Image 1 (cartoon, rainbow, N blue to C red):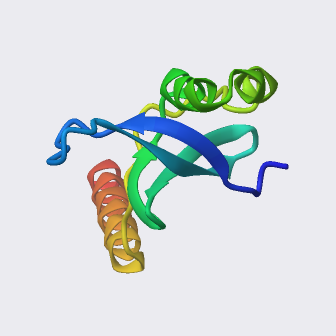
Image 2: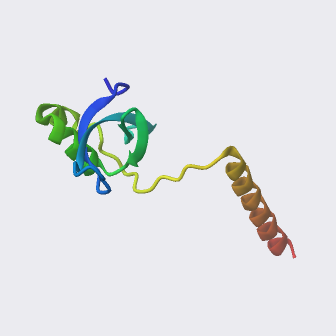
Length: 110
């Protein structure tokens, strides 16, 4: 089921203890219809957002190759960038667009 955590093997490039890999949990999140990302957890702490479908599938397959094959079609997406904003940012963006539209209308009216 897509709403459950998936065990994965991931790598820590900044490891202090010499272990540069860890077993983590990936939470699949459907952003849009059939557009998925994964939130990677280590020791129950979210550490990164995985967007690239090949990166996600590689992490799953390194932990369990059979599960990786089962999930292959799930993580197909066209998402290449994700920006997290606040509601205030969204309102500001909308206001700026409204101002631009009003300016366009004024130019055409003159």
